[in-house]
Length: 106
Image 1 (tube, rainbow, N blue to C red):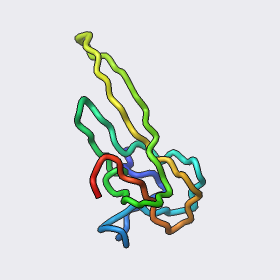
Image 2 (tube, rainbow, N blue to C red):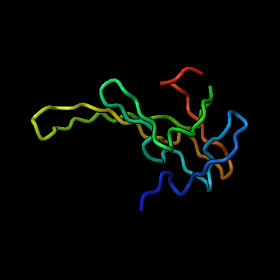
Image 3 (cartoon, helix red, strand yellow):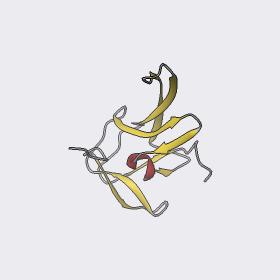
C-alpha cells in the first residue's frame, strides 16, 4: 500500500508557515525519510514529503541528492535527479522538521 509519508512524520499546523512536517516519534540523526523532490529535464516536482516541509535558517534536515540515468525503449537516455530528506540532528517527538530551501525563494 502506498503511503505518501513515512510513519515517523505527520502534517500539522506550523508556527513557521501554514502546515508543516512534525515528528510522530523520536527520529535519529542520519535517518533517510524518503524522496522530497525529483527533477526531469529542467522541471522540479515535489512529493508530499517535499510539499509540506518548511524553510528554516537553522534546519534540522538536509536534502541528499542522487543523480540517475535511465534509458527508455527507444534508446534515448534521460537524466534525472532526486533528493531525499535526511535528518541532520536527532529530532524529538512533536518537533517540526525543517529544511534550508534551495529550490524556492522564501
